[in-house]
Amino acid sequence: MLSFEKKKELSENGFILLKDFYDLAEEIEPIQFGIWQIIGVLLKKYKCPVQQKDFTPDTFDDGYLDLIKKDRKYGGEVYDAVKQIPAFLRLVSAKKNEALFFEMRNTNCAGIAGRGYGVRIDNPNEQNYRSLWHYEYRDQLRSVDGVVFWTPLVPVTSKLGPVQVCPKSHLGPLRRSYIYDAKNQDKSGAYAMRLENEQQLIKKYGIVAPLSEPGDLIIMDFLTLHSSGDNIANRARWSMQFRLFNFLDPAGQKINWTGGVADGVSLSSVHPELVIDNSKNMEEKC
Ligand SMILES: O=C(O)CCC(=O)C(=O)O
Ligand SMILES: [Fe+2]
Image (cartoon, rainbow, N blue to C red; front, top):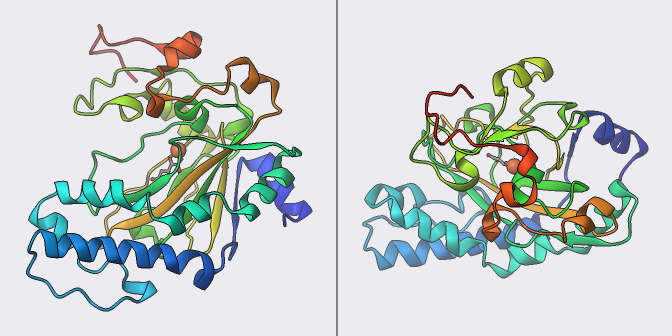
């Protein structure tokens, strides 16, 4: 499944892009169709005066922006609903993901991080739910030996704000984070954490922002620094994420494969050494 070159690229750069990994008709379109159905239900429920177009894979989200224009909270309902679409859960637990993970990590025993899968909907010009610079292990825990699967449902152009990655940053140590972000007081949980020396790290490694299309798969090492791009287009950026980790890795066994913030586990309870508590010092620089 994975060429020698791609495997090398992943271990050297901490991320790879696999073109056309998923079958559009078999694996992606059923998810797009499920999203289209949910949008249709909510357009009717909330009496939005728009005529939703018939389903096509390219326009599956038709009506979504009208829905959130009427009330932004309807977007939250879509967000919670779409991760429960059977076709999405079939993709998350697809055999080919497991097989790819086995090849990437030289293991035969993989876990899917619980509460670590979902469909991101990054609305145009919205800042609140952007993921700031982080590495996945900090927020998901489970095991340092893990990867993020990131795959889009729409063509991700530079305007749509592709995920931003710091190449080779996975080769560094586990980074520390501030648990309170004085500049983003409306954020909570993982959204409120800020990496120590964030700007220096970005400068040191540089940023790449791979463009991708439905069917493509971006893999990121659990230690690779990455963040959301800025969606300045006039369409929501729909993308899917799930995380696999290696049960055979001793470091994961040591922390009992515990989950992260989404499981209500604080980073400080598992890795106090990675946390800088600046909640008492609002002025401290990130
Ligand atoms: O796509 C994004 O905006 C951020 C994605 C991310 O942090 C992840 O997939 O782990
Ligand atoms: Fe992430």
